[in-house]
Amino acid sequence: MKLRLLIVGAGLSGAVIARHLAELGHHITVVEQRNHVAGNCHCARDAETGVLVHVYGPHIFHTDDVEVWDYVNRFAKFHPFKHRVKTISGGQVFSLPVNLHTINQFFGTTLSPQEAADLLAQKADKTITIPQNFAQQALRMIGPQLYEAFFKGYTQKQWGVDPAELPAAILKRLPVRFSYDDNYFFHTFQGMPEHGYTQLVTHILDHPNIKVHLNTAFTQALAAGCDHVFYSGPIDAWYGYDIGRLGYRTLDFERFTHQGDYQGCAVMNYASADVPWTRITEHKHFAPWESHAASVVYREVSRPCGIDDIPYYPIRLTKEQALLQQYVARADEGRGVTFVGRLGTYRYLDMDLTIRDAMDAARHFANVTAKGEPMPAFVVRPL
Ligand code: UDP
Image 1 (cartoon, rainbow, N blue to C red):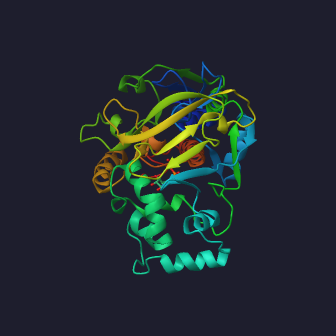
Image 2 (image 1 turned 60 degrees about the horizontal axis):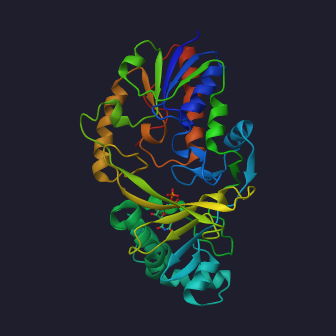
Image 3 (image 1 turned 120 degrees about the horizontal axis):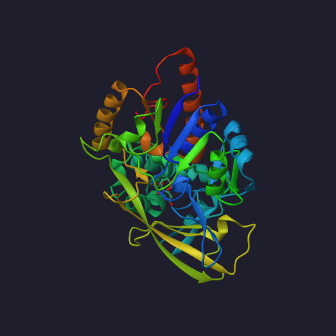
């Protein structure tokens, strides 16, 4: 049976689900409140310089998931890309993630891998056996000096709270390496789409069974004539925020242009709490196969997300967890809508996981509808 499905949001989640179900013959309507597809990985050519800009901040594609990698390569040409990040701390530039170069630079040493591992083991706080939060995780891994130089101030600025209040999992995103490998990610596949993520998502959505409506805010009336809704907006927005708003961090980008090369790399982090921005992104370095005389640069400042701001990072501290639980319980009781993606499931999601989850959601929908069973509110649970 061919169904009429509504997908709210034309980001990665919405596009991947739309495509999968369109290929099965269903009729898909996608509504997107912005004037472009691709959500926060939207890219656009800067009119002044011609540089391809990551409008909502840097997005680097990296994954170990072969199916996801094959999927994105089906819709866009990817150039090999290795993300290398530097950080400024105490008036010096260091290599990230913390690696043998960082350790030797920081301590003024020429240690071998084993010697560096021994040094950090000696500096690590061994009284912490099971780290309960970000600060403890860092202190246990690398000790107080490296923690204070590279993580404490940055994390305070990024999240607006003391790192002792944050989950340890956030730090687990960053490896510590006892080699000179300064690749920011440790995934097998890494690359950048030649013409940006907006073109990638446009190609995913390009199917005769998919109709995309930009500049169209979701209203419950739109859902009325549909057999099922996949909702990639904020879960609390679906309920009109009636029991409160889930907290997010938003970002302000202070754009400026520069003739030539501003900083010599794509991303320079600023570790010190005294500098207001967390990082400076120079967009042309994300497309090293292009050549531009001028440069577009973003200073990135994190702050609490207000009602009219764009939500970026879910905060997920105790207060938000309790509220989330209530929204999830309500969603579980309902029928006809599945919550997907970063905002729908209120998770800190990389692009590859977003695509993986979306593929799984679409397949789950195909399976349950074939059996005449109801589609659950979540295929990947937020909690
Ligand atoms: N982080 C840090 N110092 C850095 C870079 C990252 O303390 O120089 C911490 C910070 O808490 C951040 C987390 O590690 O939120 C994850 O960093 P990642 O670069 O993955 O953040 P994203 O690019 O997703 O903003």
